[in-house]
Structures are given as structure tokens and as C-alpha cells.
Image (cartoon, rainbow, N blue to C red; front, side):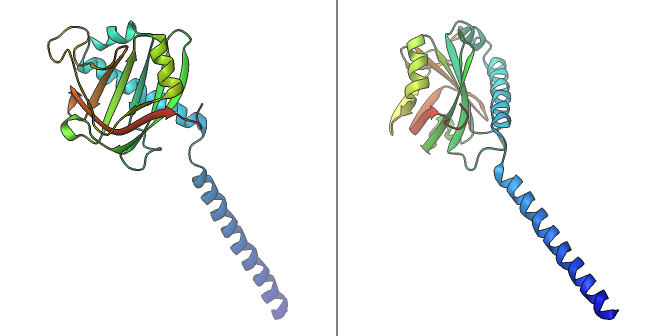
Length: 198
């Protein structure tokens, strides 16, 4: 009887240990998977809306500029808590206003070099032509090591106040933790399509 009881308890113990190990393995696998594609897209959309709301509060004229554009993009290297490790990467969303099509993109920096030395920032790109929009989506964009740009309208007022002209048909607003920044120094910053989310 004692031997039978011992065998019975040994089997129960082994089964219990196996169950615990399996449960830990399943939990580990679930955690390793991370957020789904849908969850990541939803988080990027939510962050984009928050960034736009903040821009319109800081610079009300920007709403009209974006409204008159063919499309826009919103990037952020903060606020997307589930995606980022380090401040040198970011994710964003490009909207083609004519087709309502979304294109998810990534941003990577060799070195952070925004005005005011900020490491946390958001950017809103505004495209005035279809060609500029399509080029940005399909070919990406890259700021070289010494690229610098400043807001041409500065603080003079008007609808485009605070917008940086980075190209003939492209304007850029950038928000730092301190507000709207009027000067950009991009060092090794590259923007490209997100192969996982599109």
C-alpha cells in the first residue's frame, strides 16, 4: 500500500511539474509574440490623432495647411509604448487624402539632432503635390549628416507659421516636449515603408 501511494504521488508530482512548465512556456510564447499587426496599426493611428490635436492647439493655422494638402504623414518616437526601444527609432502613418489610403512607415536615426536638442519629438509632414506624396511613400526620405532647415515663415504669423520647408512641395512641423520647434537639424534620419504593417 505504501509503495502504491508513493508511486501515485510521484506520478501526480511529475504531472504537476509538467503542467507548470507547459503553462510557463505558453505564457512566454504569448509574451514573445508581442502585439498583433492590428494592435500596432491601431496604436499608430491613435498616436497620430493625438499628435495632430496637439499641433492644432500649438499652431491653429496648421489645420488649414493640412486641409489644403494632398496628403500628410505623422511620425513619433514617443507615445507608442509597445513599440520602441531607445529614442533613435519611430513609426508613422502617411495618409493619401484622395484615396484615404494609409501607408505605415518607419523612421530611424543615426543620431538625434532636432532643434533644442530634443530627443523626444513628433513630426507632421505635409505634401502639396501628388508627386511629392508618392515619392515619399515609395522612395522614402533621408536627411543627410549635415542637413539643416529652418521655418521660413518663423513666427511672422499666417497659416504656414511654424512650418519648415524641406522641399518645394513638402512642409514639416515638428513638436518637441517644449512645443513647436522652428529649426531642424536632421543627422542620418531615414524614413521608409514598414514591411510588416502594410
